[in-house]
Every structure is written in C-alpha cells, then in structure tokens.
Length: 191
Image 1 (cartoon, rainbow, N blue to C red):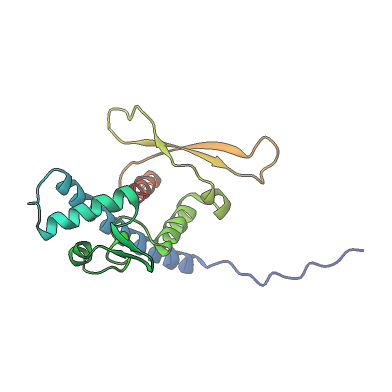
Image 2: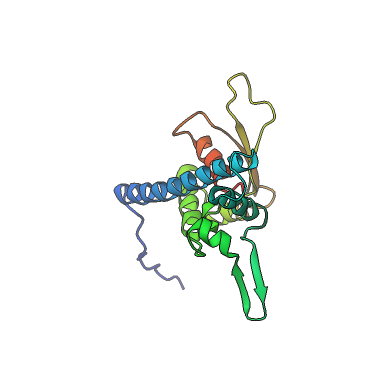
C-alpha cells in the first residue's frame, strides 16, 4: 500500500530571517574574535618583556600565558576543591569564566555562531562541520601573500567512494570565504 506523505511542518527561514540570523552570529563571533585578538596581543607584549615584573599588568600577562598553555589559571588545591590563586583573581578582575578563560577561548555560544557562519558561507551541514579537519594554508601563497587554505571534507552520506572531497579557499580580503577561515583559525589558535 502506498501512503500519502503528510506535508512538512518544518519551514525554512525566509531570506530576511536567514540574514538576521547570520548577522547576529557575525556580531557575536566578531566580538569574541576581537576579545581573543586583543588578549593575544597583550600576551605577546608580556612575552617580549614589556611589563615590569610584580605589576598587575605583568601578573595578568603571566596568567594569560598559563591560560594559553594549560587552559586554566594556576590554582591552590585542597581536600575540599581548588581555587584560583588570589593574585590572578585580582589581576583578571574575578574568578569567573567571563574574565578568565573567555579571554583566549570561545564560549559554546560563540562556537555555535562560528558554525552558523560556516554553514551560511559554505553550505556545510552540521555533520561536515563537526568532523571538519583544521584547514591548512598552502606553503606557496603566491606573489600577493594571500593564503589559500586546503579544506578536506568528509560527507558520509554521498555514496560509496564519493564521501571525501577537498576544497581550496583563498583569503581575498574582507568578505571573502577565506577570510572566515582565517578568522576561525585566529579565534581558535589557543584551543
């Protein structure tokens, strides 16, 4: 027997709704990228020795260095748990994640915003984004110095022997698909 397929209750976004979603994702991701880039520049200044040892700026740089290497600030450990060392709490303005690890790492919401931007820019679905390998820049960037990324994709439902492909994406400046890859690599470099 044949059954009539009921009409779908799931509706796609209109073009205007999709534009609003991607604009919100872009705002959220760019804010996170700006914060991570600013703190990465601060960390580089600390590594070059631009801050006097013992100052609050030096302690913040030391904390960022530990955060970049280990993903956490130095802690005191006891039988009841652990707490961040007091000098880092003072230098960072508190022990909360909003003032500590979020300086160098994306939150879940910011990572989702990046995923939405990848979906909007390249048309990849969640299974492709989830298994995406880190894109690598080609060694020869040409005379213009713009990086071309080789992006290996795994699309498991495309059929036998046809589920792997590679795309080359060039960063041609603001608004290009390659710029999003460059920004994604910058935002996740400490992860």
